[in-house]
Length: 606
Ligand code: SF4
Image (cartoon, rainbow, N blue to C red):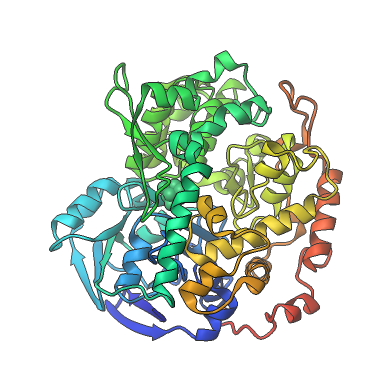
C-alpha cells in the first residue's frame, strides 16, 4: 500500500506518510520496518509509559493477500516489562483490514487526556470519547466499540483493566481471540488512554500476479492439510506431554523440569481434546485453524472458556503445580478478561507460590490470601490481586524487573532475561534454548530468540546438552524468524511456502514482482543487527545476555536430571554466537558488520 497512518492522540490530528520504497527492499515490512521506525523515532531516554513513547504497528508484504495465513501484524514500542525495545506480533484481522484501509503501518503518538476509542475507515479517523470504557474486559470493549460503528467487517484491538492499572505484562487483544501478548504493550496503549481501536477499508491488497497467487494458495492449503493435520487436531497443547517426557517442562516455578505422568496428564492435549474441546479457531484466511476453543463443563469453574496454548498451559499449569485443566482454562479466561499475558502471569504466580513455600511471605503480606502450589482457586484469586494491585499483587504487577528492584534477595527465584519472563521450556534440558533466551531481542523468548525445540528435542539433529554448534543454530533460527516476522505470515505455515534458511522464490515473486529469495536471510540478519543496535543504544551489553541463577543449578530429577547451564557453558555459546554475528566480545556489532549489512547510514533521531 506504501503508506503509514500517523495519529497524534494529544492533538487528535492525523496524517498520511509515504514509506520509502528502499525501506521495503531492505527491511521487507512487519518486524523489519518496525525496528527501523523505532530506531528513528524512539530515543534511549524515553520511558515506556511516557507520552513520548509511541506504538508502531507494521504489516508485511504478505499481510492481507489471498494466500493462506497472511494474518500477522507487528508491534514495535518501548515495553514496560524490559524497559527496552519490544517487538510483538498478533494474528487476527487487524493487519489485513489495516491494509484494506490503504495503509501498511499505523503509528500512535502523544496521549489523550480522556479515555477514547479510535476508528479508522479508509483514510478517515474518528475519535470516540467515553469514560465508561474503563473497567471493561477486552472483549466487552470490542463489543461496545462494534455496537457504536456502522456495518460489519471491522477488526479491533482492545485492552482490559490490567492495562488501565499499568500492569507491566498487560496485553493488547486483537478481535476475539488473538493478542500482542508479551512485553506489556497493553500498558503503553493505556498510558495513551486508548481503550480500543477498529479498522476497516474497501481497498484490495494488490499482488503482482493474482493467478499465480491463487495457485500457490491452493497448493499451500493442500500441503497443510497433511503437514499440519496434528496441529489442527490438538493445537500447540500437544507439546505438553512431549516436553514433559523430555524433561524440559517448567514445574513448580522451574524448581524442576518434569513431573511423573499421573501428576501432569490432567493438562495433556488428549485431556483437553476429550473433555473440554468445543471448536477450532482460525486467524485470517488460515486453513490450519490451530486455536482450540475449550470450555469447562462442570465443577467449580464450570462455564469458563479459553483457547489454551502450550505456553499458557505450561505456566498456569505445571509451573504452578496445577494438574487440572479446569483450573488452567479458568485461569486462562481470567487472564483474557483482565487483559494480561498468560506467560508472565503464570510465572509471577508461580514465584508467589514458591515464596510462600519457602516461608518468605505470608498471607498477612497478601491481604489474607495464601497462594500455594497446586491450589487452582488461589491461582485465580492471585491473578485478580495482580490486576487490581491488591495485597502482594501491587509489587508483582511490576513484573520481574520491578520485583527484583524492590526485593533483590528474591532474584534466585525469578526466571527472566532482561526482565521478560521465561516461556514454558526449561533450557537446562536443551542448551541452545538457553542461548536463544539470552540473546533474543526482547528478553527470554523462544520465538524471537530462536525456536530450537525442533532441532534439539523433536528431531534431535543436535546433541541437546552440547554447547558447541549452538551459536550457529540460534543465529540461523533468529535470522530466519526475523524475515518471516517481516513478511506478515504466521510462522506455523512457513513450510508451505518454503520460507526456510534456503527460501524458494515463487511466493514473494508472485506477491511483489521482485525475487527476494536470495536476500531473505540477509534481510533477517539486517533486522537482527538493527535490533541489537537499538539494545546497545539502550545500554544492553554482554552482561545482560545472561541467564538467571536457577539455570546454574542442576535439575534435581526427571529425564534431564543433573543438567544445568553454568556461566562457563553460556560463555562458550556466547563467544561462538558473537563471532558468527560479527559482534565484539561485549556483544556490540562491529563496524565491518554494519557496513556489510548497509546499516552504517541508517538515519536516527534517537
Ligand atoms: S496456524 Fe494458528 S496461529 Fe497461525 S494463522 Fe493459523 S490459526 Fe493463526
